Length: 289
Image (cartoon, rainbow, N blue to C red):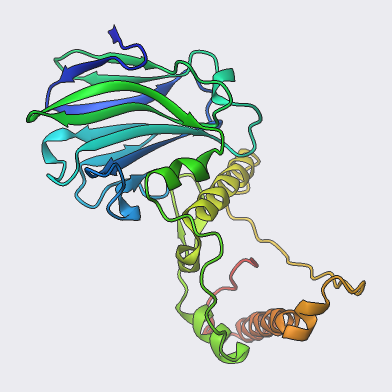
């Protein structure tokens, strides 16, 4: 295996290529790949591959089991660079420089394999370690080892991914109408790691979705370890009368939350009563969220 120092580059063949992160403890570092145009920006957010978006639209870059597969021969002509990056989990303290032996390995069957060690990093919590890029009709790889102390948010912003933390506010219709309709049309999905996702999460920003899924993965891991693969939770509402939430009370937000909870509980009790009477017209009660 050939090792490339920071800034060094080498030609690679246009064959199926696999990329993996080495030296990091599982769960501490996440792997990302950006498809970049001539301006070194993504065309759309879909050009960012990570655990919540495991493939580019054209399928040239895929992520599965912590390993990235690059099909260089099918990368769109508008894409000139594939940037392979890593970021520390938000719950992990310190910087990438404190991860001993952090590197990316590039493997090509029947061809040269490369090790791309992270070099020259200090306070960075996210970094592009490897770039695969076009040069005179061929592909080359380069050890980039360039990072950002701002972590994931700084990394994706640098490459043109939208990280709006405050999506535009949309008026909320009457609670009894909105809540009933959404509940009837919502279908959750569960991935191979036991993480449950509902359609409404698509309205969150990329960074918020990434943080939410990291937290859900950790919870799912604990539940599976304890043999609780289908947990049912109970939501307890604690009212705050100190005045710190006065604006939320005046705006009606607290009232809407209570009304929503009451409607869901009433529907759940109604369905349970009908099943008790032998009328199987109601679906099983959903776990509380």
